[in-house]
Image (cartoon, rainbow, N blue to C red; front, top):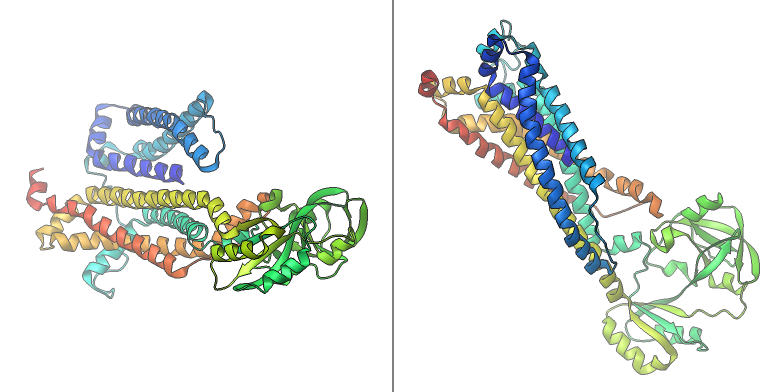
Length: 512
């Protein structure tokens, strides 16, 4: 996105240079300079700037690498070694420079068809007449509005580019805000996405403890809503080893991972992750051979799950009754506790006071997953901030370039309009109204596409990690507020840039 927008900005800049110096180009052509020589002079000066800037950017990136490595280490505890990569730097500089050269040459090719006489007349040809859209004597509406619409139609190709840019950056902004909201604000959907069960406390019963009685005792404690056994180990499905989950009552899970079919209910049923289903080429209604320890049983597939945990969701699920077929002495050991109206710390203290000797470990699961997810929250805040900053910068830069170019092209026209009585504010409003509708259209389309397709894009991006569907919450009021903010920004920038028109006067044009 950054590269595409940059190339479009460069195209505007080259066009602006040609329009601003069109008379000088006519003089050069009249003196005998060839199109190749003029193109070479324009290309050379911009390529020197590009190479100089690319080298500065590559140097800054290389200097930032160690800092980035320290951030990774501090966030994750993983050692990140940064090494200077000559090939990466050279490749990046060459690609960027090549793209810039291509855009510059394509934008400046109009010089080849520019006749010296046309250039000396400021670009006016003998036949410069186009269809008169919205004739002032027939079209309905205020004069300012009609003049703005005429200007908008006159620059339709340029406005199409602006529309596409606004759609792209608004989509990116909505995408980043949706990610931030679901990963840093309301984290429930994110936890479900990665396959985390959102119980409040986890109790691991000691070996030899009657875990069924302990589970019943926990359910009678103050503030306990319900409990389940939630054990994890390993097993074989059709001779391939995967993570195995044994749960006594799947209906009590808050994270219903199954997106097709259902979780197992009987002792001869299992559910597979869709990754495992794809690997063994079997689905709902098929039977598989499951081996736990030395015992093998035929099991019926009843559902498919989706998450990015467990090594890309390479897992299968069965009931505690099903597990008894493999191990008659099986008893659940990990008890998930779901609380209601009581603090986790208060419950843990009460449990340890009554049953502390029966448990190997008692974990505040809420705090545990909060600590583990804090890195993602911080990363999403940085990502959202960067994307919003890029969006604001692009909006300001694009509007500055197109409005500045338009003022240069229509300088004489604006001078005449001021001489006939138009005020600077009226002309500023006219300029803003000629671009803001295009910007509003791009922002609205980009916002709608972002709301509709963010989850689809995330699903496509994360398929390789084991996800089959993503259902992040899209807060429509928040997205609407973002779009309104961008529209207000666009109007404000348009008005500010259009203030350059106050320096234009009929007297100054006559003196020129």
